Image: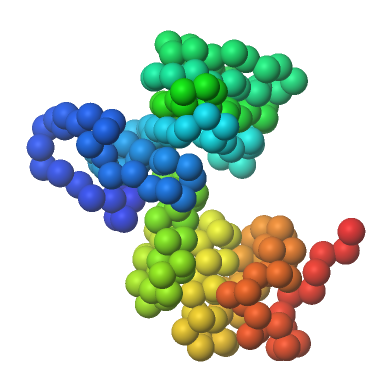
Length: 223
């Protein structure tokens, strides 16, 4: 059974109809078109990205941490995919299926730009919202200095997904900016406990600068 985050907007309608060009876009990851969130889809991840020539529409990544299979469809335009060691020329209508979550993949818009649809989920398990979807909505709040709202949303995300280090790390950043140093350090240390990569991120993060003179601040990882 699929699970729905309490962060989602849920409609009582039995179906939804939308056009890609009608969905409000975010500039946080190129031109992100948040299909899943906009339609309230709970059983699988589905989003789209659109951009001009040279735009990195799908950032190079793998899905090892969450085990997703991913299917990409070039809806319009022309793109170039890199999947593992292969480069794939992908005009409109091309499907690219990354069956192995560990394989690296990414895509860049070609001449004239492109729009790519992506669909993903982990076989045999209920779908969970990927952490990057939450953070993609939070980062603009930091950019605008809206730390109270960022804290509110991140506290909700932490309650919803207590084992996700990225939400704790970002909550530490928000609370540090609000002057809540002890709470910020507690969240930061818990994030590092869950994922040691956050100790490295913390060293140069300006949102955490005021915490670095505290002896509890996590040290840089040893190379």
